[in-house]
Structure formats: C-alpha cells, structure tokens
Image 1 (cartoon, rainbow, N blue to C red):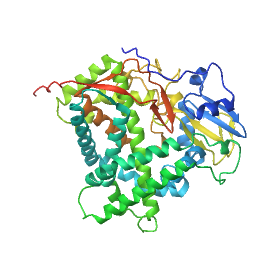
Image 2 (tube, rainbow, N blue to C red):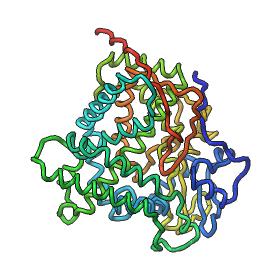
Image 3 (cartoon, helix red, strand yellow):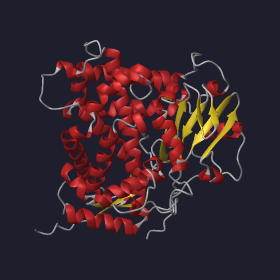
Image 4 (tube, helix red, strand yellow):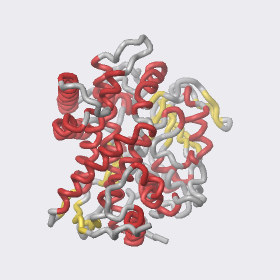
Length: 460
C-alpha cells in the first residue's frame, strides 16, 4: 500500500480570527484552515457583518446542495463578481429561471452520450503532444504543458478542429491574464454592503476582459463565415439552440456561454492532469500498476472511449487526485431563503460553504485521508462512504454540466501519454498547492518526461 503523503499548505495552530482568514485567502484560499477544521461536520462563524456556515459532512452537503438547493442555489458573491465581467449571466454563475433555461441548453451538449466525437478530439490532441515530447531531451513545465493541452482540446471541441487550432494560443493567454489579475476576495460582501454596489476592477482585469471578448467574437464570426460542415462542435449546437421564446441565442449570450465553457473546461482539467503527473512521479508503485494496466488494455495503441470501462485503475488514479487536489476547493453559496439544519437557523443573506479541500480529507470520512491511495476508488472499496463525501464537480442540481467531459478527457489524456513517458520531478523542487480561483501547484512543475516503451497487449 502506498504511503506517500502529498504536500499541502501548513495548517494553522489555532482557529484564526476572521480578518486573518481573509488576509491569508488573498494569496491562497486553501491556507486558511487549522487542523481541527478537518474534523468539523457543521459549524458557523461571524465574518464582520455576515454569518458563514460550513457544511462539512455528507448530511450537511446533501441538505445544502440537494434537498434544499433552491434556497442555496446562488453562487457566492466572490464567484459572481469575479467572473461576471467575463462570462456574464452564463450557466456557471446565473441562478433562478435564467440558470434553468441555460442548463436545458448546455447540459445536453456536454452529456455523456455525446462524448464519442469529443473523445476522438481529446486523444488526437494528446497524441500530438506525445509526438512533440518524443524529441525532448530536457525539462518541461508540465503545468504549462497541460494548460496548453486542455486549452487546445476545449477550443477544438467548441469551435471545431481547424478553427480551434487557429485561435488556441490567443484565447489561452487572454484567460490566463484575466485569472492572474482578478481579486481573490470580495470584501464588500463581508462588510454587508449591497450586492449592486460596483466592484473595483483594475486596468489589467478590464484589458483582459476586452481581449477575451474580442477573440471570442472573432471566433464566432469566423465560424459563421466558413462553409457548413458535418463536424460536430459545441458552437454549432449553441447556434442551433433556441430559447424558451423559440428564438436563437443573442450574440452576448452566445459569447458568454462560449467563454464559460472555455473557462470551466480548460483550467480545472489542466490542473488535475498536472497533479496526476506530480503524484505519479512520487509514487513508483502506483506508476508501475498504472503502466501495467495501460499495457494490458492498450498495448501501445491510442485509447478510445470504449476502453474507459477497462481502465479502472487509471480512473482511480484520477479520482484520488481529484480527492486530494479538487480543482475548485471551495464552493460558496448565498442563502436566498431562511432554512434550519439540525436545529440551527441559517438566515437569508448568510453564506454557506461546502469545502472539498476539507471534506475530501475529513478525518472521520476517509482512511489515511492525507495519503495518496488510488485503490480506495477501485470497485469493491468501502470508500467513499457517501457520494456526498466526494464532490470535486459539486453535486445536486448544480453539479458541473461538464463532469463527464472533464473526467473522460483526463483519463484519455493520461492513458495516451503515460504509456510512453515517466514523469521525473526536478530534484529539490518544492511543490505547494495554491488556489487562485482554481487549485494548482505554485510555481509550475519542472519535469523530465523519461521515455518508456509500452508492452504490447497479449493476443486473445
């Protein structure tokens, strides 16, 4: 059994004051917890004028995100105000009737039943990266490599193979600039000031926002100007979509949903794949078992969507990575209607947090919660103890619409590349998780991708 404990930020010795939490959160939102937080089930505290509730047990997560979702469906003000300039009222941050209408449009496009074509794009793009790595003799920053890979995949899936290739670099850089410039904390909401009050946005944020919108508008116009094709794409389905009034989506709505899909579909998946490579580099026994499965099932050929059901250990590695390093480690919601949980009043206007960073390492929910043990996700395991204890894509009605897409992409890309390479972290490089909107290894992952030759699959 693997005994590797992956790195995490130092835990605070005692429960910090609210101001201390906010100060720490400005640079790293997963560095704000004390050790006792990993044993909490349901708790609350006052942060200036606002009461916050932590749902950190399967029962409280089910209550907030499923049973009473209507009362807690609005994303937290930090999420909304950070992303609204970029993605407007798109599916990710809208609520109420707008969210329900957008969900009916977007969810079928990304549904698992439509993954056949997208899986081919994923493998094709990953194989191009394999070819480029084949001639390398030095280091690469695997975090950056995975970011470019995921950006290329989501661009091709959204706009088709050729158009996706043409615009990937500029789209990727524009989104990167925006995420680096946006503020981590919405202090105005914790001070009790009204939601409509304008938030200050730096010149860098405004410049990145305008650039992203220009790029997306150009991509949509370019797509419309090209000859019709039978090649499936997300944008073609969005162009074909109709609202409740029977009319096509207007230009702003179309751009907002395209921006949302790129934002949600590239950064989180890229970070997950990067964490997989890091964990494999530190765990030779896991790496060996993964290679054995890939050799047995694939024998050097490219994976297909049909192979997923046989790649059980590969999926377990990915899911254990998602447990330890959830892409969105904090899921905030604003209370729209007063509720009561276990006799505790949750007033309208307060904040509810589900924190996968805590929940996935909870001392009473997981065996050796800080260890990297993919076997816990194999069939027959007793973990997770509840589906509400493992929520890397959220859960309930607002579960990520792209969950199947993201999980399939990660498994297929890992299967494509890990057959041919062993990752080796630069000696002495310190890896620390840091969260700015999403959870990533701070400072990148300098690695040597050591070639390996897959063993041909046995003849049947």
